[in-house]
Length: 154
Image 1 (cartoon, rainbow, N blue to C red):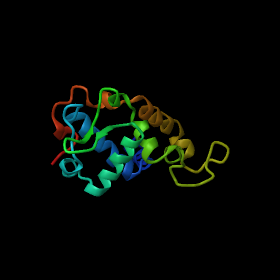
Image 2 (cartoon, rainbow, N blue to C red):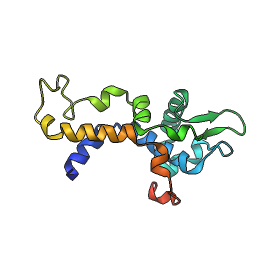
Image 3 (cartoon, rainbow, N blue to C red):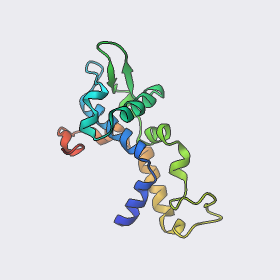
Image 4 (cartoon, helix red, strand yellow):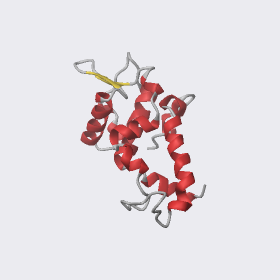
């Protein structure tokens, strides 16, 4: 798959989904049921505005993708069960199914019967990208990753 096609696929995900994935990966690498993390301790590391990240993580928590506890010893964390969620689970909560399945050119009526200019070029690879999102869990991405700088360079 060419670099240009990869860039097209990245546009299928909103910045919100990308930010949410970064936040979840940070939690996956740094939290557990005994160690919860506050948004104020994450946002600079993942390079996402604090209020924006808080909103995204709250939404993921409401939908059961990540866990949270309120109160003095509260914060966000990933349980072992949370780590089984896929990247698509995150994207569905943040963007909805429509964004991922929409035309890469942004044309409303683009589909198999009425394809845009790029439809045939990216169609098969787009399906593969969606499968990657559906089949890649949070645990898959973080297993064996000890250096957070791999995900969050300074």
